[in-house]
Amino acid sequence: MKNSTIYYVICYRKLDSLVKMWIRDVGLSHGMPVEMAEDCGGHVETFGSYRLGVHHRGSDIDALCVVPRHVTRSDYFGSFVKLLRTESEITDIRTIEKAYVPVLKMKFSGIDIDLLFARLELDVIPPKLVSLTRTHTHTHICFFKSSIQFNVVFSFLQDLNNSLLATLDTKCVRSLNGCRVTDQILSLVPNVDAFKLTLRVVRLWAKRNNIYSNILGFLGGVSWAILVAYTCQLYPRHDPAQLIREFFRLFSRWNWPSPVCLRAPEQVNFGFPVWFNNNNNNGGNGNVVGVSGSGSSSSEFGYQEREALMPIITPCYPEQNTTYNVSRSSRRVIVEAFERGYATISAILDNQAPWDTLFEPVVFFGRYKEHVTVFANSTTKHKHLLWCGFIEARIRHLIERLERHKCISVAHVHSESYSPPYGNQGYCSVWYIGLAFDKEDVEVNLQHDLQRFTEITKAQAEQIKLFKADMDLTAIHTKRSNNKEKLVQHDQQNDDNYNNNNDDTVADTTAYLLINQERKKNTTAELASSSTAAVMQCDFHIKRPI
Image (tube, rainbow, N blue to C red; front, side):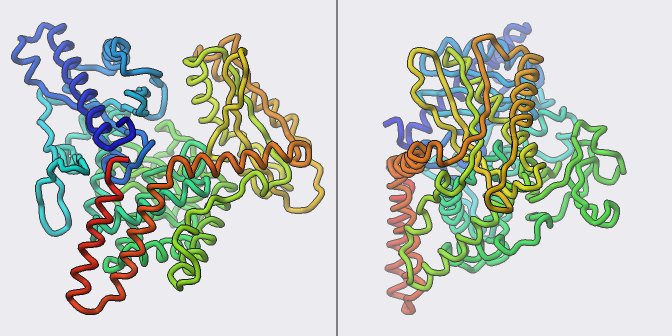
């Protein structure tokens, strides 16, 4: 039950009800009449994979709490968090108020939820248009059948015009952009169904190749969605199998750092920082963050100016680069994966390999002769969740330090941390960074870099009063020959974990693509009709409760 799609819907509805109750209570505490407090609106919107309709078993839910003007962010991280703590179904509550996009993290009946906050300058929040799904040809009602399709793709936020953004603070605009970007992507692709299936395959492939993680310097969900949407725009008549091949061909040969954009930037300027490409005025590189048309330095707006190595740009104002964390090493790893993907899909479509070869796991630990291993320790579960989240967001800074060594060609962090048995001493998480060198038998001393990383990270944690005496962080440089068996076991464990969690999804996607490929071979109307029915049946199985 807990892994089924209907369970996601139930959790979403419960969270939405809690938000409505809380907004009413805040209104009453401000002296509002009962009727007014109940009618001021406010609710939860989803975005990301759930809103796109490409989530699967084990996916988290990205959501946004939309509130009227009388509710503040202090209320959100105060009274709302207190309300959540009274619910037995909600655990692992973590507030990250100082983040670039402030977020409230939790587990709701075992489902990970990242909940953002947006306060609109409206006395009453319009009700959302639930269950309306618009394709490029028509609009229809999406009913709850056995597959439990719950789609809120086109809500009132889609019609939120840019003029309303001018009344909001920067943090609220960033939070709103999750929903706005998702809806824009869906509206900009010529065939939503083909886009969704192609994105499902690409997401699975990216996770199998350990390159699905924005926080660690790879690509996150919105980046993959934009790349797939761009491919769909270029090839509007292609079926998913063809789109997958063109996707890999296109981005294995892309001239980075040329940006990927789904549309031209909007001619809007409300003073929010935006990303723009200024090739004529920035020495040819041109990847700048600032206020478009203002000529102002990005540093005035709280952005650190840095070269964008792999810019993938959101399609609505204020336009942002979704790949700010990509490093020189992670870009190289991603491009090499694109090249392998193109070779694999070409063999598949030439009938030289089965579809499931696209999802074969890559070897990580056996690939590199030397590693940097980062250990995070703490004594309680709650502290460990906070400590690991803080460290994970700073691993990319360690990558940048390692890249300064000219002899290191790649510093490749594994996209998943490991939690080895730690006995009665508390909790431990481990991250591995594989090191590749330009030459064989290179000796490099990384002690100073690793020590500085741990010192700076602890100091930053102390500044925000996160670091406690029972927490620790260490980083060591090891060679594969010293713990070869252990690292090989990690590769096997990674493979086993994926197979246990994703066999159904991989099998369904493979079947769907095979049917699509077979459909292309059919020339008569009768065969085409029969194949289309088979595709629809397979689509049901892909989205069935799992």
